[in-house]
Length: 360
Image 1: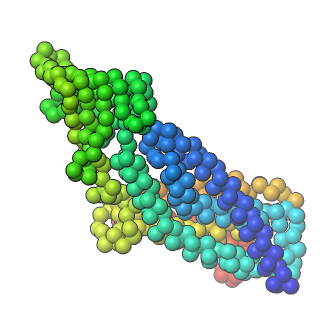
Image 2: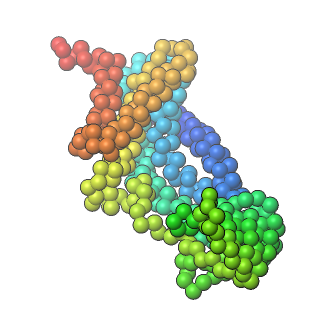
């Protein structure tokens, strides 16, 4: 009998978790797909990297979706059992909290281990890979990515460039370019044709303009230098593939552990707290889902979502307080997890009458 009930509860929670997680992931990936298509259209990403970015984004989303998906699925699955009077019947057969948590652990343990790997290693690697794809796209950006007849920001110095027409080879015709140079001076160039040329330095390229005129000076003054040219090469530096100071979210976990900066400590505790919060939320969902027979299936879901939002906001605030040195790193995020865990144990004690046994 016990094994049958364990398999039944496990199946109900697992199927609900798969459905909830897939729906939430699909919603997020649909939104991400629209952004990626926009970046591809603007030339910020290569076309063949679109699905790579979406796949890597899914790894990041799962670090959040697994905990909330498990939390909601437990509340929905157990809420249905309470509504249909199946849970009271199980309790009449001496199924207590251990009879619910035992099959839940079959799902919780592998999910907690998986989300621990994602938060500590997987998601940062995915974020680094996305940044690298974007950097490679910026390095490979050429004049063919510029839309003819429109003013476009081009190159790392954010020059404004306009071409009346762009050929299939990437050459521009009737070119207008304006960029800021040193000492507040502005350089304005008008040319019949422009092309992009590789240089000996792999981190530098040349924008070569033909048959044009260059105006250089300070706006608001009459001192301008005018130069006519047959060919004029403008070098510009390509963005680096490996930024010198990666964001804390993209840093390897070992580097965070060896750092004493508050932002890095906060990020390390945040990553460690994700699998911990997955376990705490799963434990909390069981007492929160308890309701009367024939009550609405979603009656307790609003309370659960409110508790989750408060939990998440407290973690976000605590992380910001660490970064601002308002809270000691020793206290860090752990006090938030401790408060929610204490709240969970209190609910379990009240619902199961443990507090009466303690005070006897």
